[in-house]
Image (cartoon, rainbow, N blue to C red; front, side, top):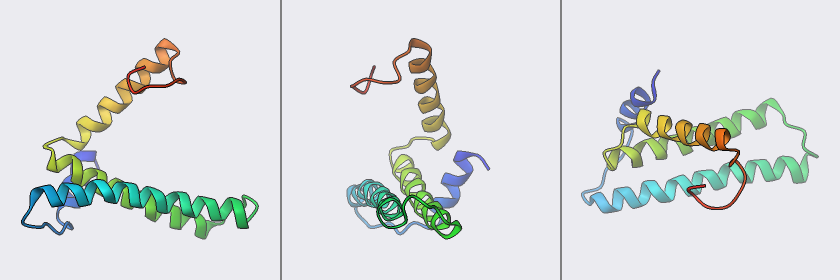
Length: 110
């Protein structure tokens, strides 16, 4: 499955409001909320399980990561962005940073 194929299928499960700005806002906030849930699962592994990751923990994190991706796919589509293009641009950006030795540092355009 390509990213664009995923994006197309993800759209079939979205609930759209009559207000496009509200949809975009919900999807942008959803990215943050679901990323927070990933972090919460990780916190519990570190804080309460001494870093021991069970298969159940992996499954729960996998579900939350899927939710993050779903929201990213919907927000990208609402901005007329191909998910394939978003992912390719990201890989190109990271490869360029690695080539220049700029993987660490501050700023978006390092």
